[in-house]
View (tube, rainbow, N blue to C red):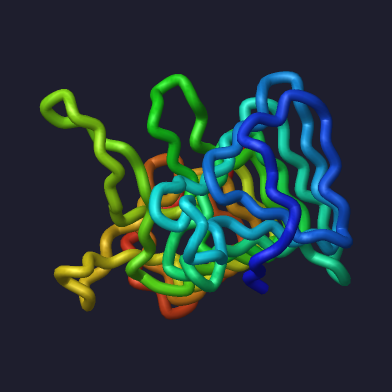
Length: 231
């Protein structure tokens, strides 16, 4: 799916926008959907994170992420899901989406939810009939760290997506490992409400707020405390 051409999304979206199903959209750096703005993604649309052009400055310095302070509605269908994925050039990098996000029939590779400031939410509000997968346990992302008054671009290893509520979803190979200990997987701390979901080859440790109802766990490295599903 990775491309060198497409519609580049702006860094700030301040008014309502529709991403049509006949186009490919690219997020090569941080894009923020601001308060009061709603972005709707139509069935069949494709969203690529990270640049596919090695000459692009964002290949070296960009931090591809989508921060939703307004609302993001991903409205795929069974026949035409919305595909979200990293470029071939950055195939082992994360697809970072967080905030007020609602997904229907999306196929997402390398999704994580991680926000670096305490006043933002890192929880995806709702996912239904979606598939989420990692294409490598050595999933990387970029961020800025400050030490001694100097701010530097840093490569770091990431964790997993965070959901408030997921229904009829499939999670495949959601696990991470260190480049120094490639055969040892980090604990992926899950929380939220999950109904009729399948977890396949995932590393799972459930928090006190991990609720599962009628879910399948297959080939998982797991230590799960499943709370009673709230009424």
